[in-house]
Structure formats: structure tokens, C-alpha cells
Image 1 (cartoon, rainbow, N blue to C red):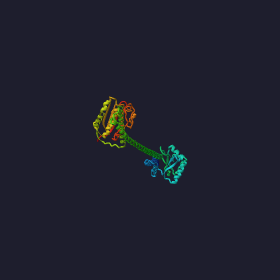
Image 2: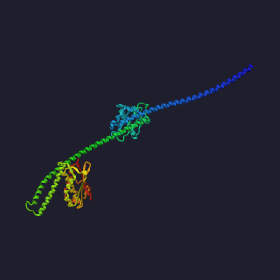
Image 3: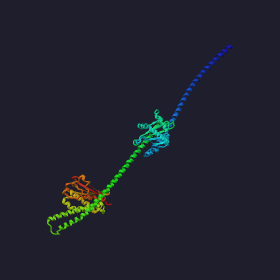
Image 4: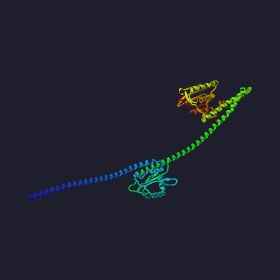
Length: 493
């Protein structure tokens, strides 16, 4: 019985142990599964951590690159502003300093410009090189100038990154004593072409595409500044040449004007002298003719009297001619003093109309005038003003049609002057003669002038008188319709 109980207990114990073992194995499997899951999670976390670290490194690198670009852009902005502030080629490169180049990420820089006359590149400036190093660099560029000319021709920026297999790359590094570099062409539209070189001894400062872009922009800014300087130089030279020509021409004109003045003075002196010399014999001729006509030396035949009357008449014409010549000469030389006082135009014109009353009846022309209320008073020499009206009205009366002639005078205010228009319905003046009729001795060629005698001095005298008053005179005309002579006089203030 005891053995049975023991056996049962043993069996039960074994079963319990088996159950416990099975449960333990299940727990171990669960634990192993959990461990596997945990390991997988840890592996995933590790990958994520590595990714975060790589991303952080890349972000830091990108931030550094961005900061570098921002600093470079600021430096480029300052450089661009500096080189654009001068219009002298020699001063452009002096605006570039080592601090700005350092902010672009480089330590050394040189620039060369092509001399067409010397057929070589000439050093424009350098930063970071001694004089001995300059000479070595110059010699190297002279030997390899085709490379730089081709660079300029292609308008291409190159760097130590973009030319890995080019044999000249190592030469450039050795000559310029750098590990990395950028070379960009300078291409002004006007002026000398060239290139700018920037490099650094730091092998870890390899130029990026952004660096190449900044250097390209800097080269373009220098090219623009050189172009502006060349254009300014050309403009300045053209201005100097123009000023020189203007000065030469001015001197020629002054000399010509002096000669004209001398000739004019000689002419005036000659006319004045001749006129005075003519007056004496004319006075004698007229005097003797008057004595003979008066019969003081005895009665004369009618034929003799007729001829003596013609002598007397022509003597009067010559006296009037001499007087006109003298008056023109005196006014031109300033020897005639104008007695300028307020004059009432309606009163003067009424007096002039009375003078022409007989002539207007004989030829049958109508003379009228209309002066606006604001144009009654002018500042003028009364005697000279009357001569102007007499000459202009008398001149118009010669050309108006017989029995149908009309001469009208209108006066009105124009600014600070009074303008007077004397209009007739005569034959008119050809266009080519309108500028010449105020010249001395000029007469328009027409049928009426061929019949009517004249000296061609009346309008010249009128022009001198008007200009002596500070006014001006001109004419408008239409053939077959008539003419209007207009002149201005200062109004009374």
C-alpha cells in the first residue's frame, strides 16, 4: 500500500515536474521571442540613431555651407559696391582687399588684363604674393597664355574641381602655391579683357559650385566696372576733343567777328566820309541851280529851266540818299542818341495820316489805323518813330493797286512790348527776298520796282531804328495778296 502511494506520489511529482518544465519552456520561448523583438527594436533604434547622426552632420555641413555662402554674398556685395564707385581703371582693383577675399573663402588672388599692344597679360593686382612670386607667376602665364586666352574665349569659369585630369592643373597649383583654386574670365564689352584667380592653401577648402558662381559674379562686376571706366574715358576724351574744337572754332569765330567789325567800321567810316564829302558839292550844285532858276543871273530859256529843275530834283534825291547813309552809319556806330520818352501812338499816326493825305488821294488808296486801348503809349524817339512810319507807309503806297489800295495799321500789346502791323494789299514779296529786304541797297526785282526809283536804304534804316529802340522787325507776305510789316517797341511802364 505504501509502495502504491509512493508510486502515485512519484507519478504525480513527475507530472507536476513535466508541467512545470513545459510551462518553463514556454516562458523561455516567450522570453527568447521578447529578446528577439527587443534586439530588433534595438537594431532599428541604432539605425535611426545613425541616420539622425548622419542627418545632423549633413545639416551642420549644409549650415556651414549656407553661412559660407551668405558671408560670401555679403563680401561680394561690398566688393561690387566698391568697384562700381570709381570710373578709373587704375582704382578699380585697389577696391579689392584681403578681408573681402577671405570672406569669399580664399587667401590669395591675382588678376591679369590682356595688352593687345604687348600681346601678353599684364598684372593688375595681387593679394598674398611677394614680388618674387609675382615674377614667377608672370613668367608662367606668359608661357601658358594660350590656356588663359582660350578660357576668355570660351567665357568659362574653371576650378581645381572641374579640371581633375588637366595637366596644367598641377602647374597652376605649383606656380600659385595653392591646393584649390578658381579662375574666371573678365569680359568687359569695352576695354581690356582678362581673368581673376583666387586660391587657398587649405586642401579641405575645396571650392563648391556656389564658390564658382560667386567668383564668376565678381569677375562680371569687375568687367562691368572696367567697361564703365572705358566708356567714361572715351566720353571724357570725346568731351575734351569737342571742347578743344569748340574753343578753336570760338577763336575762329571771334577772329572772324573782329574782322567783320573792322570791315563794318571801315564801311561806316567810308560811308560817313564819302557822305560828308558829297554834301558840299551837292549843296553847291543845288545852290547854283536855285540861283539860275530864280533868274538872278538873267532870264533862261524854258528848256534850260526844265533841265535845271531836273538837276535840282536829282540833287534833292542825292541829299536824301546821303542823309540816309549818314543816319545808318551813325546808328550802327552808336553816335545817334535816341531820346526815349512816352509817345502817344494815335496822335503820331494821325499826324502821319495827314502827311499822306494828298498822296492817298492822288493814287486812290485808303490809309487807316486801329490801336487797342492797352497799346496807346510806347517808349520811343518821336522823330525816329515818325521816320519808321513814313518809310513803311511810303514803301507800301508804291505797291498797292491804283484806286483800290488799302493800307491799315494795327497796334496791340504783346508781353512787355507793343506790336504794330502795317498791312497792304500790294503785289507781295517773294519768299527768297523776305530776309534780304532789310539789307542795305537791296531791292526786290519786280515790274513796279523797275518803274519806281529807290535806293534800297529805307527798310535798312527802319531796321536800325527799331533795333536801337530794343525792338525787332519782320515781314510776312503772299504774292498777289499783300504784305505785313510788323515791328515791336517797348511799352510805357
